[in-house]
Length: 277
Image (cartoon, rainbow, N blue to C red; front, side, top):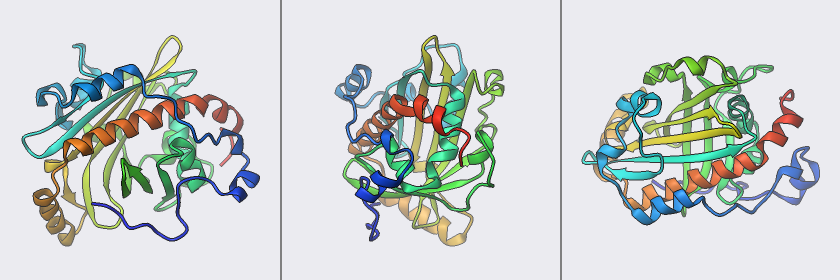
């Protein structure tokens, strides 16, 4: 479901933004080429559904000991799509990721740093309390974002949730310097419909961190957002809007591009602005 543009919202920064924002030196409109492992996943095309299991199997998929597919997409028999992407982030710590998710929705310009070719606008539905940091700043809060996924403008409601609600508990997550996991219920910003879930698991490596992203969108993941009207609309959406291969490809490209770009500037940005709201 495409969103209609809102006057004044646009891709890119204005001259006034470039002249006034204290973090303007981090604005870079060029994204690096996608990593080879992501390009390989796109060339390979859809994989068998069991290789990218449902959200109910996320704990075993992310924290189990068996090898799992880290890059790819599957279209399921229930008219959903499952997408996975892995991003190497040299110099990034899991704590930096927690800080970023609490910081970036305070203004559209911060959000645009993340994906300068696709991000349009972001704002908190209700601003987090001043002075909060790390996970406490974003968990249980909702960000309303306008972004292009491929060529489609989407207005999404990203409601960040406690990972335990998805069964995602693991001892390393207790130490934000070792690991973190960002989880959210994703939905439409213009309608009371939730459409899926996302999780970004970040764990330390010898050179920084590795992010392992998972998306579960459409089909049985769609539901009304706490209203009878939303439930009716969600049922209609499940019947009429099954994700396509093009949708899955676009989401994989978007995630891989934005997370690689984030890793390119986050260590320096965090060092300069981590104590500022």
